[in-house]
Image (cartoon, rainbow, N blue to C red; front, top):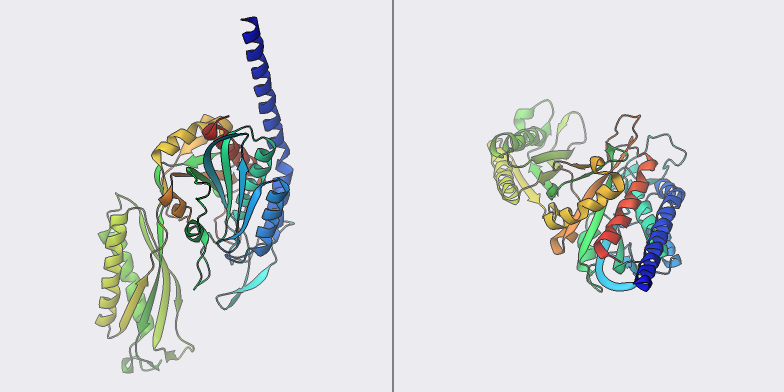
Length: 421
């Protein structure tokens, strides 16, 4: 009995020591993740062009002794870390690409990178927080490499092109899945996070089931008849027809979608037409996005858009075509996995700081992973407590770096709680 008690006491001491070291390593990683984040923020790269970003990530993972795969889905990086005991395989994912946005935020590590995007000069900026996601996951990798007292394997997936590959290219989570990122070893569950400039630092938000919308892109081409701007009756104005089409599309949302069921959005984000003030052009082109959280609503919306575009154009003596792509699926948090993961988030953030939220009409290609295996995706607070929120995908996007450490704690806790020791 005495021998058994001594062994139990020894095991408790070892467990306590390991836990203490883990917590210390997590706290000590914060300066590094801030440094990494600022490096990526100052050196942003667009989708499928994250060459230097990928190189820095790969060097870090190799330095930790991991098995590392590079050029996955063009510029993606995957690190494989085995625990001290065999067991299940899970994946943690971070997206690494930036956006064609010119930064206005006055910080010492402000991006001054310039490039050409779709024929236009633009700045490049991490205007959605992917630099923080990358830094957080690099921090988690280092902490777990030093504390691999878990049973199983962790795949660290650094994914390119979450914002979408350039026209004519494949990329992102879809291509990663096609190339087998969830295989060899086979992943059982995957976890991801997104920092938010709208959520206070220290808070975590989540939702089981559909949490982010399916997203489709569409193109509309209108053909009229060119004429002098002083004599519109001699031609067919494609700009006027485009305006009528846009108005008609919004009536689908306001009068045909059952919005008490789920949200739905149609946005025309770009119109191109004409060369001079006094020439009615022959053609006009529109680009836009569709957001839905229900697949039956998506099918109805797509069908009505196709009907309305051609019918409205015909009514104004023009011709029009519309092309709607397949797009991204709904980001769907497996309810069972969500329930299993919730205590991990509450452990590191406090139960009162882990908040059930409503679905949002933003989209995430993390959904391609969730089509294949159960996945859980949550939102991490990044808004300073003393400042007004800023919007994602804008020149003024701003994140409080003190919020990143909670991301490291959350991912680390998830690994130990899911895999066990």
